[in-house]
Amino acid sequence: MSAVRKLRTVVITGASSGLGRATALELATPGTSLVLAARDVAALEDTAMRAREAGADAIVVETDVTDSSDVVRLAASAVDEYGAIDVWINNAGVTLYAMLEEGSLQQHEAVIRTNLFGSIYGARAVLPIFRRQHHGILINVGSVLSEVGQAFVPSYVISKFGVHGLSEALRVEVADEPDIHVCTVFPYAIDTPHFEEAANELGVEPRALPPMQSPEDVARAIVRLVEHPRRTRFVPRSLRLGVALHALAPRTTERLLLDALRRWHLSDQPARVGAGNIHEHGQSGGKRSGERPPLISTWGLLAWLLRDFVRIQAESAARFTHGVWRELTERRELRKLARVEPT
View: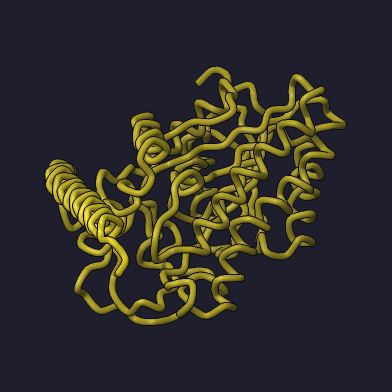
């Protein structure tokens, strides 16, 4: 953690709960100054108190990342208080469980405003500061869904693909600044209050597909990016295998994913339909972990996926064989007709 102790100022959005809170506490070491941002001030104050107990300095800035002026004010507050910004972590995010054609368009737009435009506003606010300083680290929290699509959360997927694109574009823009780094972290499902707090128009409780990552696991990966910046980091690293499998066999992978989501992601437990924490902060302030464990174990899911893979391949082989047989039959019939002499 020696590199972390040399830092002066780290700004974290969405620091009131979940991954943001865990990241703040992982970074809370003597010599580090934390600027904690979110809508829930009471929960932010609790995070700040715990960070101070660990030896860090910390201030709280009430911030709605969908308001660009709020984000500009956040950056100004950090500079006014500490004189510089060394690291900016775009972490704030929300989710809507709804089919694209059935969910409220207003809710879909709100997810994209928070997740994507919130990150854009953060980058716009901090990059001029980084350029003046000639150093800085911007960390955008993406998702495995920045690389592979998923049903039932289309606006979330759209926003996270956008966050990935934002990082890619900004790396080119700062390519002539060797000490300005743009990093993206791609976590798998994290055990946070995310699932309880998400907006929901499906009417059933969503559960994560295992293996769930603890907020601390992902927070430690973010700390490693702070210590040793790199373009991307998958959490866990084995996620790269899943992304590669999707690239090699997209149709099969997408079918497997849809089957798994229907069977194991959407429970049979009813859930209240509503906007969740999209427009107002949630009620889980101060929590890092959620209260909805997966419906199946990791090994159970792997066994189920293997069986489903065999079934899908068998169906594909049967369709292929049927198609070939039908084409051969049609060709034989055409040859018979061709041999018939006209009368």
